[in-house]
Length: 272
Image (cartoon, rainbow, N blue to C red):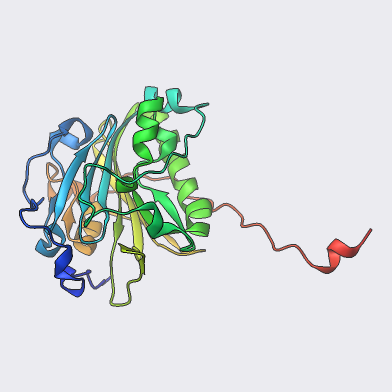
């Protein structure tokens, strides 16, 4: 499998803020969200431009001022947090991230009338209390996501991860966008990912795997080794694991896509 990795050179250099930190090989300010306290390491140096780490209560984000999206969101997903999140009323308080410079962050206006969902990376359904739920609605935790993909492909994946967390007791989950190919789009100033992925590591089984799918309706869902995803995206997601460990495959559930509602037949509405 071969993918052409997105290069930041194709975007305006004006988006790169002076003094912005590089994430490659950098230490993390929120080690509890990562396996062995080690955050992913960016291997494609062009992805490391204008990056900033943001730490929240139960997840951490590496944000790109080039794409104006996260490069990833990471969670130490515990069974007790999943249980606490059940029954929580959804907040829907989408907001721009005040800790980011205006020249590098997404705004609500970028998504307005774009036709894309504001797609969570660290899901609202994983958040155990009101504070963390509100944090999950920062646009620094969002990517422009095809609406059908969000509801019929991504939501079932998120649901299966929560089921796994209940069974395993604890999972480390890294979710992110991939910007592959030469025909990338924007909504406002925000780059639309071509693909999305979700890495799952089980400390109990000491194994990992990843879901990988295009950001479009009715896309195929691939389950691939973490090592392969790292080659595709240009990020080492689990730097504390050996190459052999990352080639081994954690068994991930087969995803049953939610059926998309059929368009109502016009003539049926005129009967009876």
